[in-house]
Length: 106
Image (cartoon, rainbow, N blue to C red; front, side):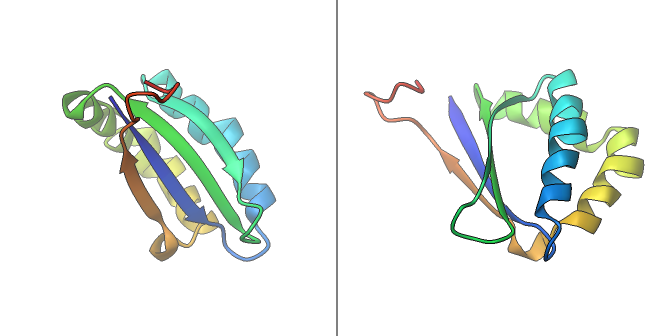
């Protein structure tokens, strides 16, 4: 099992709009296709920062879920373009982390 921690930077002054879109559209859409979104945060140290986490059982599951989400017509035609309008994609940082043996997230 591993987690993906995704750090985003909203376009200046648009973080509130991004959070609403994420919570109303992106997370429900991804969850409907099986993605396990486990957390969503505003970054208190970066004015327009946002962080969220997803959990995967293994690489095979993540490949299936990535394809289901990012190859979906709704993502390509509606959600993806809206995400591009709200975020600065060049500021995205994605980390893959694995819980330690004593972690409660195991």
